[in-house]
Length: 225
Image 1 (cartoon, one colour):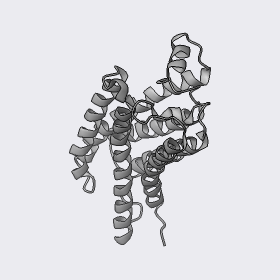
Image 2 (cartoon, one colour):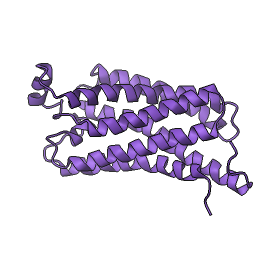
Image 3 (tube, one colour):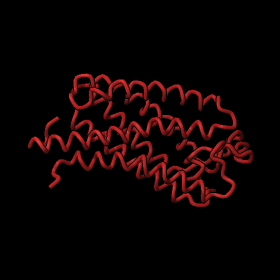
Image 4 (cartoon, helix red, strand yellow):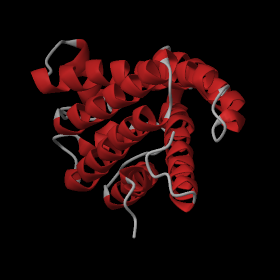
C-alpha cells in the first residue's frame, strides 16, 4: 500500500506539465485563426478565446503539479538552498494558479489587441496576468539554480545537478529573448520552447520524487530523505 505522500506529490508533478501541454495543443487546434507561430499560450485562455476552459484547466493542473513538487522537495531535501528552491517552486505554482484565473483580454500579438494594450485600455486582470507571469517565470528560473546546490550532497538527486543548472541558465536566456522580441513573428514558438524547458524540469523532478519515494518504501523508511 502506498503510504508515502511524496509518491502522489511526484505523480501530480509529472501530470501537471503533461496536462498543460495537451491543453495548449488541443485548445490551439480548436481555436479558429490561431497561430502557434506568433501567438502566445495565454491567448488560448483570454476572454475572447473560443474554448478558454481548456487552457484554464491546463493552467490549474500545472499549478497543482508545481505546488506539489515544491511540497515534495521540501519534505525530501535538506539544507537552506533546498528550502529556498522548494519555496520558489511553490511560488511559481501559486503564480500559475493566478495567471490561469486572471485572464488576458485578448491575444496581444493581434493588431487590434496590440493597439488596446499600447493605449492602456486593458483590464486589471490582464495586467495582473502579465505581471504574475513574469514573477513565476523568474521563480522557475531561479529554483533550478538554487536546488542544484542542494543536489550535490543528495544521493538520489546528484545526477540532476548539472541538468538543473543548464535549465536555469537556458531558461533565463530564452526569457530575455522572448521579452525583447528576438524571435519576431515566431514569438509563439519561442515561448513554447521556453516553457517546455522549465516544465520538463518540473516533470523530471516529479518523476525522481516518485522513484525516491518507492526506494524509501522498499527500505521500510517512508519518511527518509
